[in-house]
Length: 136
Image (tube, rainbow, N blue to C red; front, side, top):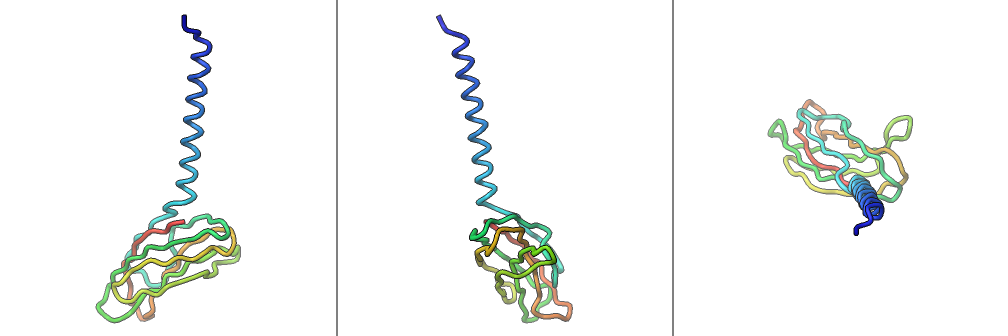
């Protein structure tokens, strides 16, 4: 004979264990994966809409792509910005020339909320189409 009470307890334990495992995996994926993506047109001086919470010492990696809206020779500086409570402060940046993108990383000096700031190196109306991914 099968003891239904034991089987029921074992099944409940298996379901509970599965739920806990899924929650842990989801939390780890959110903590160490894609923080946010971005995609914008006619960008000259602008903050990213997306932001992410980061722990002190955690690496923030930006995989950036850009395309100039005009054929002149100019660049885009992408800065990783930390929310100070009174505004944002740069913790690292990289300038990409013309239609060249790339990857750069910075370590978060303290825990907090971080976002990107995009700044054209040519201030007379030249803009970019920018897109990419921020990983943490």
